Image (cartoon, rainbow, N blue to C red; front, side):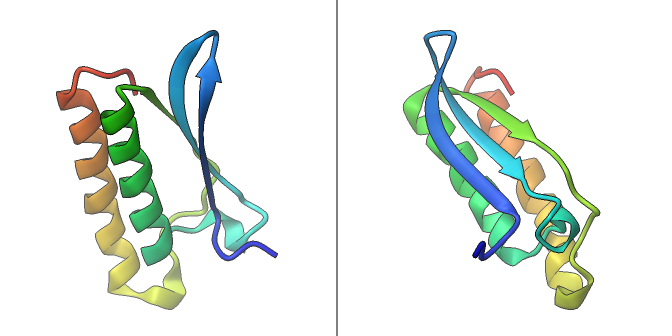
Length: 92
């Protein structure tokens, strides 16, 4: 089974390179924990490295309560990740 709510991959969309990160609501309501934060950051950095658009498909119930403050810290990490994509001049 799944180990977290994030599924990410690389591909082409209309012939253009993309990195896609999708949240799976069926896994703990798509809640964000440390693993998802790390995964979103890695996906964003992959988009920058590959000069690809970064597409995120959200479906989340919010921060994962079981991880406490560590899950809330992921909000800042994901904001930084998106900023890195935007600073590289790539679509988000």
